[in-house]
Length: 473
Image (cartoon, rainbow, N blue to C red; front, side, top):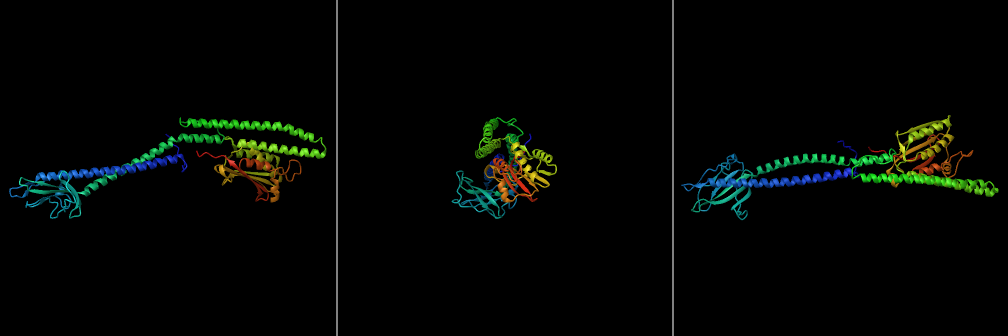
């Protein structure tokens, strides 16, 4: 099994599932450890009480009244702690009432004693026995089991007490708790690792779908391809249907744009031809209006085409091959000029149709080559920040500059050159700076176009164009 690890963030589905699984596992293990430790404590304390009760009745069965009217007997409890001093394990027998016998006690108690609370403070239970904590003379915290027994037919009775050191219980509980925490910690870490691997492996199909969609977005595939689980297959089918619908919409828009262009070309040409037969004032008026209409139609057709292309998931153009091809053409047309090209990183791509890239950069190169003195510099680099609001903030951007070392333009001349239909220095038809088409194409792709004086003294055109998001795979 090969699990693909990737960077996850707070908005990641993997991060959310892992966080939820981790929080639940940690909470469950904490609760389980507390419950088990408390249950073990209750069991250990109950077993300790039962042990003291058994030892108490063992002492009772070992004691009788001798012929000298004294208590006699030697309890054998099988525990050396009753014979070792200051251990907290004692047995004590004290005569009651008029029975004036000498008390007996274990050798571990020595000459000290353990205080007895009043019956009101600690009453006897239904078995006529009581248990209470106490402190001996050596500072041991002990639990005392006590009962009172009539020893013969004359009604002579004695109080029997057996104590055990509670530190033994606490040490046993602490040892168990440490072992429990270590075992649960190992189990919890193992569960988290297994859960993490299972979640990452389970979400792999979503990664596959994301990478397949990224290939479609980069123009490397036309639909989502691959094997998807049953739960994801409907989503993949719907996305493929959406891509196909998008493709048909784009093709229909292109066809309608072409049909509209062809249908208007002939009427406008007829108007221009007929304008020559009119008198000069009327001819100039009709011709200017027909040319304006032709420019408007071409502009709006271009916008419609670009809008359809921009909404397509398949719009992608590699920057370097297009720029190299344009530079080769410019070098052949201008053998006395130098063209310097720099593209970083290699393999960068624009989310634009190729013909729009060629029209935009070609226009800028043509103007730069016409007005430069020695050369033109073209660069393409990733933009530091997007300059648009809203959806544009979620896209990558490429900054392209075209700079020459010509005489340049003054700010008011730059503003004039950016106006629609304005061409500066038009010494012959078709020459000069016609930059409105560059501005319109850039704006339709939600980019930015700025014309300033560059550091080499000439004009520098700066474009911010939408790039293709690289897959994180």
